[in-house]
Image (cartoon, rainbow over all chains, first blue to last red; front, side, top):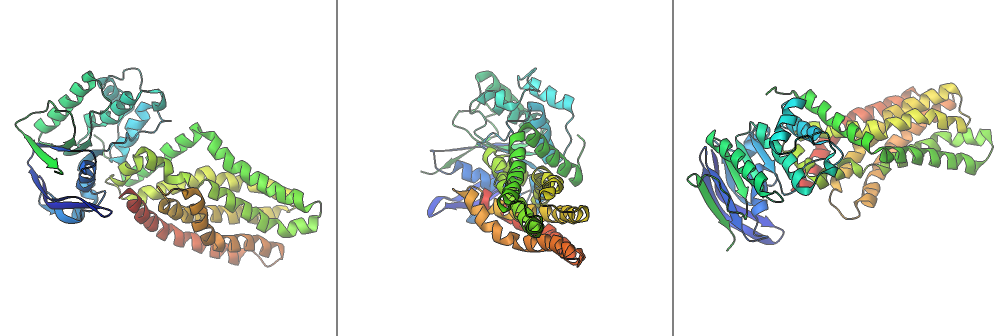
Length: 205
Length: 227
């Protein structure tokens, strides 16, 4: 489904990594590990097409992602290390706008149900600025619940979450994989995700 | 799940930005008050000489509007860039250029349109008569979206740059000159009895040109900023 061949990334003068290869079949996931500054986030940004690799190619179902353009962007969901929420909007509004950016309509009731499932019952109307760091992450992660995109690229998805929320997110990702989706995540935590379909990618030496 | 068309996504972004602006009214009001104060300073500084006031009115009001709309420029994308929502916009299946147009339109509604609406009140300070006020409003109605479109390029280019606020002024002010010349020129021509049509047509032509090229340039600059 997702293939990368000979990927290399150069940041400024420094080569972060070179010659990375991997191939993900439906239902499998990739854990990217490496020291701080090794280029985990840079790799994820290459995979979603936010930046261009210095060498190598990324293919989605056999077609280079550069050629797919908007079509590829409709197939992926990316959550970076930032929490992409607007502080002045309510949790529900944030969820609805992120759905709209992905091109589908999310009803208020659907957004509230997703937030409730992420343990934010009754907080749907509070401005996100009144929520804690972990709760903000939960708002951002709630979009996974109704995501129809087959590729999830998650940068440190478990950061700032409590055990209960980590378990919840693991359950959501497992379900996504069981449905034939693929996921790429960087995480220092040894995630409790299905080990059989796991691939490891170590960046740096 | 119901799919949304491109128009619906654009509307969603405009609504989001308007909602954000309404929850932070101070930023919107700052632009407006800046315009009011600059225009009033001119009127106060010149003193009670109706003939002279009428003569400098087009230039003074247009420069005031230009500076006021510049004040809000670096906010156009900065917040989205800082909280990561710009990244999400770049990864939307809708073309980024379209989303950039939505951002520019929302920015104009918040910081351009209020200037157009208050301009006739400020024009009274300069002893402008009613038809002249009409031309002033018309010239600003064509000119302020042009300023927002040009400013968007500068705002996108200076994203993430330290001291970007000052840089964006230096980048965009020279590009504002044609808008200033034809905008103020329209009012002056009307006062001189030459008719404002020519200048307004040129201003409209510039607006059409900018509406086509600015989203492309803005998108390219945004992609560079995000890389």
